[in-house]
Picture (cartoon, rainbow, N blue to C red):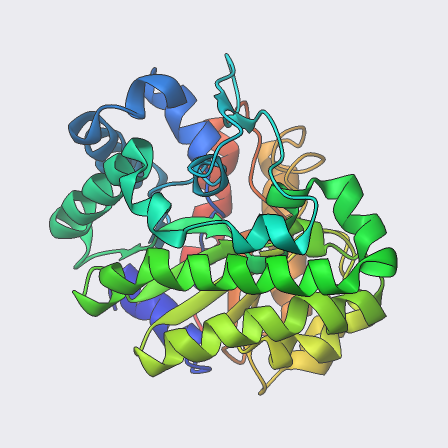
Length: 342
């Protein structure tokens, strides 16, 4: 089976011939490894494509992630500006929304005119044409709750879940509509068969289970329902310890939920097996960055054994990896899964 077929089989709840394996995003690592920068690539779709194809060949992940690290441009298109950094993904300078009235003034069509988003889309299509028959080629964005928090500001969003629930619901609705608008042409023209969302502000370390169920799950579900209607899979990553809300993950409608290293992977198997695909959750810092090759292999084996070998599982780090993770650790991570026959 080709890498893309292995992943898609797992996303559908099946048992592929080996353990599927992928990093999550890896934009910072790839750009650093290619010897370029987010700022340079932001205006150069051919070079972005060259980087993506070269790093896909080097990493050998089952999934390639065009747009990784450019998530803030979906909010900055409406104002607020972007700050490029010497290392790391570009930051949003200012937040844009403090009231329901502010949300109502936003025009979704603005995102179509953001030049950097256009560059990412061009690189996505070119990358899919070059390696899409071998690998899953997806495009990343923030999930609805996190994108909404980018508009409002994370601290203000946390307070608003208690004091301004109407604002939270309205901006999450707008963020969901924006994501559907963003992905619609890419799904309908066959470019994307898998959509990748990161929803870190929906973290178990930031909002309670009750808040997660009230403000994050419904909007993820609205998005994934739309994706399913277009025959597209969704891979959703949520940071932090989400062990206490694992039973809610199938309600998101995601094809696969990517779990943070803080989450109990054995418990995830117990709760999610047969209900949805799940991925995780090797520690991206203590193991991938700071561990030896032997420690990486040991950690991968432990996760695979805990998650089970019945299918419906993808070996992943517990989050995006730091840009300075040793290449040999990534090789070991990938090799361990690829050699594990199911």
